[in-house]
Image (cartoon, rainbow, N blue to C red; front, side, top):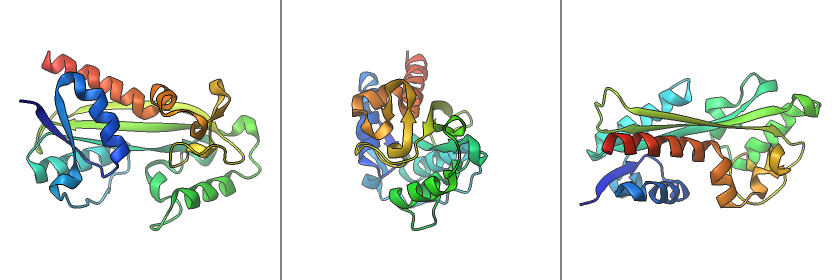
Length: 200
């Protein structure tokens, strides 16, 4: 019988991506929406804290192992902002576009050589709600903040995240290219290795 694991997100893209990567371990990845998991306040000040909060909450409400991710953008010239507040950078009713607009305004006048940024992703695997040693994996993706939006793929800050080695924005990459390079793709690979070691 396939082992079930709940993904602490309502994002269908993340569920699909994770299910594909964990298929070799015979995991059935289920979205938390199938269990009516309630929202939980992300009160942590770091990506690790927030991912643990989400994974523990989902494991507790479903009685199954859970995987949660917390990710965001850290801009060097802004002292690491928006950081853990990436999704709600422009307020509680933030949209991808309002966040990008606020970021570009904040970066106005900053020269290209000082526009370094990185995407960060922390993935947490919790075997049960009281798991004292959850698996924690982190990935990062370094780039720069472009001066204008380019590309239609991806989501979030992808249109302004410039990938120097590809000479394009993250939103101009194919999904396959992005998964190979991205912070989430790197964290997923680490998680896969850890799970294989534990199961093997």
